Length: 440
Image (cartoon, rainbow, N blue to C red; front, side):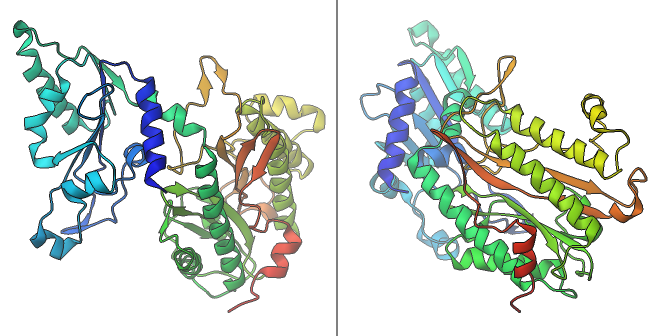
């Protein structure tokens, strides 16, 4: 993303901030994988959204109306010895030249310099309560400013969660963000097609994962937005199954929930298909029911509708279908009562979607006051109904047990309706059967 885009975002946030306020955004911490090996680093999404700065040990400061510049960045100084081991750093010079900070300082000088930046600022925005260590550090800086109050120095008196400033803006994606998310969706959809082509009985779940991840990386999306789920047979009934270590069996379904991250933006797709390329009759009955529920939910994704409407539509279709298949007792007339009693929940226990953006479960409230949020153009979310019937569910006829199905797409609200960003990933059962196992 171009640096000018980050500048535009900062200007928009600064325009919303009171003149006597300050925004502090610390970088994400590095996470140890084992002993002296770290997980691949991923920057905090809020800091990334406003700066594009990718390094740890950093703090971005936005200070409206500050004469010496409104964007200050604390970061690691250049260190040739450490860079020999760990790679190049932006350094103070790069923070200014490449990330357009008005002023930059070594992170080692943070405790020395922050009290002066806090002086005269009444309201401080920061990720309140997210990092106890940073909370304590900020309290120490504020205490040092308060010690000067008798000398006429004004100290901060109000701490506000930075979510208020940033997350409503992040919820509505602009044209640049939507283009990036569309690219991520296309890459991931093609990766799901590749996994379907690769699938055959006798492979391991992790081999399908490898095919999918390789395709994404080969197209420029090196990282996944979350650990891929590749669950076959009974494993598809485990919502967050990530072991991916079982052999694919003839006659089972396999559920793949995976999506790449591209330029900081997530995609999120789930497809379920037969390992041998042919749905059995019970598998197809449940699959077509989930597909119909998803279609009903997506039809509700239009401006002016509320967040709960896609979920309610999916629940109606699923509950009606479960009755018609004899899995739930009753008739079509009893469906409203079954829904009120949440009799569908042993089979469909999660919501039908979530916001999507820089985080796979992206920011933004689902309710505004007492009401569900109204859809507006630029919102992006998933639509992912499912049915999960493990062997332990004795309510279902035996033919339907050990079947887990979820179908998930990424949907953007447009001015006159919606766009399914992930439409390239096949979900029509005939199209799936024609694709599975066609390439080694």
